[in-house]
Length: 492
Ligand SMILES: Cc1cc2nc3c(=O)[nH]c(=O)nc-3n(C[C@H](O)[C@H](O)[C@H](O)COP(=O)(O)OP(=O)(O)OC[C@H]3O[C@@H](n4cnc5c(N)ncnc54)[C@H](O)[C@@H]3O)c2cc1C
Image (cartoon, rainbow, N blue to C red; front, top):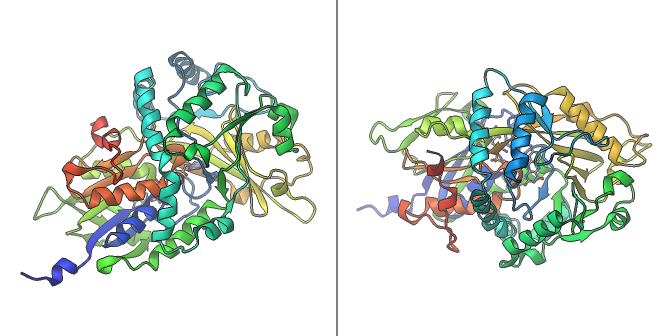
C-alpha cells in the first residue's frame, strides 16, 4: 500500500469566482484540498460584466440582521403584489402603498417569451413559501446562517492568511453603522415587532449585541445622524445598527481576498489556482466514464477535469444551468436583477461626503453607500430576461437618490461608466442550497444567497468544506446546526 498517495492533496474544482466561490476555495484549501477555481469572466474574479457577477457592484453591507426573506410579507399583500405586477407592470413589494413621490417603486417585471414560464414557476413556489409556516422556516434557516456570519468571516480571513483582520477591515470597510429608513413608522406595531423578532432570532449567539443590534429611532435622530437626508426621507424614522459595517468597494475586497487565496499553503499540499476566460468557463458536467455516479467537468477551451474529489457549484444564478448538467434539472433558481449607479466626486462637489454610513430606503428598495470618492446607490428588484440593463431602472435609481438627499442638486450626473446590473441568485424560499447534488456524488451545491451573499460567504465556505470532508450521512456543520433546511431535495 502506498503512503505517498494518502498524502497527496485531494482535488477540488470550484465553479464560479464570486464571494461564495472564493470563500469555498479558502476553506477547502485549509482542509488540504488542491483547489482550482473556474471563472468564466475573461477579466477574472470580481468582473463587472452586466448580469454575470453579483459580487461586483452590490451595496457591500455586512448584513447579519437580514434574517427575513422577501417572502416574509402577509399573503394578502403578496397576492395584491402578484396581481398588480401582471396588470400594472410595477409595484411595491409587500405593500399596498404606491405612488410615493420621492422614490420609484422598487419592483419591476419584464416578461418575455424566454423567461415568462421561469418567472411564473418562481412565483408559484414563492406564494407557497409565503405561508406562515414556511416563513418561519425561512427566517429560522436564515438566522442560523446570519448568527455565524461574523465569526466565520473572521475565520475565513484568518485562514486566507490575513493576520490582522481588524486592520484589513479598517482598510476595506466603512465601520460607521447602517441606517434602515423603514417604510412604516419606527414606532408602529409592524416595525417594533419585526425588530423584536430579529432580536429573538439572533439573540442566542450574542450577535444581537454586535452587528445585528438594531435600535428604533425617530426622524430627529435620523437627521442628527445624517443631516443631508431630506425630511421626506426620514419621515418614518427607522432602525439604526450602530455596529454594522459595509465594504468600500466589494469588487476590490473580493480581488484582494482572491490574491490571499492564491498564496495559501494548506495542509497536505493544499493550494488554490484560478483559471479565467475560456479555460475557466464550464460548458458541460457529465458522468465519469468509469463511474457514472461521479461528475467530470469540461471547459470551453476543451480541458476535462476527471477524478475530482469535490466539485462545488457556486456560479451565482447560472448555477441552475450547471445543476441541470449534473442531473438536478428544474431548480427554481432565478436571477433577481439589481442595479447600481454612482456619483463621482469632482474638485467642486463631493457626493461621497453627503452620507457617512450606508443608508437603506426600504420604500424604494435600495441602499446608498458612501464609497471611496464616490456615492453608490444599489438595489431594486427586476424579474427580467437575460438581457442588457433596463435604462429606466438606472434612471429611476438616479432620480430617487437625488430626491432623498439635500444639497444634491449641484452634484454631477451619474457616472454612466459605472452603471451596473447584477443577478442575485434567488430561490423562492429565500434560503440557499447548501448540499450535495442528488445526482452526482462528488458535487456540492452552494448557491441561492439572494440579497446577502457577501454576508453569508464566510459561513458558506465553511459549510462547503464540512460537507466535502464528511460522508453523505453526516452532513452537519461543525457546531451541529442542521443542514437539512438547505438541501436541494426540497425542490426536486
Ligand atoms: C444591487 C445588489 C445589491 C446587493 N447588496 C448586497 C449587500 O449589501 N450585502 C450582501 O451581503 N449582498 C448583497 N447583494 C447580494 C450579493 O451580491 C450576492 O448574493 C452574491 O454576490 C452572490 O455571490 P455568488 O458568489 O453566489 O455569485 P456571483 O457573485 O454572481 O458569482 C458567480 C460567478 O460564477 C461565474 N460563472 C457563471 N457561470 C459560470 C460557468 N459556466 N463557468 C465558470 N464560471 C461561471 C460568474 O461569472 C460569476 O463570477 C446584492 C446584490 C445586488 C444585485
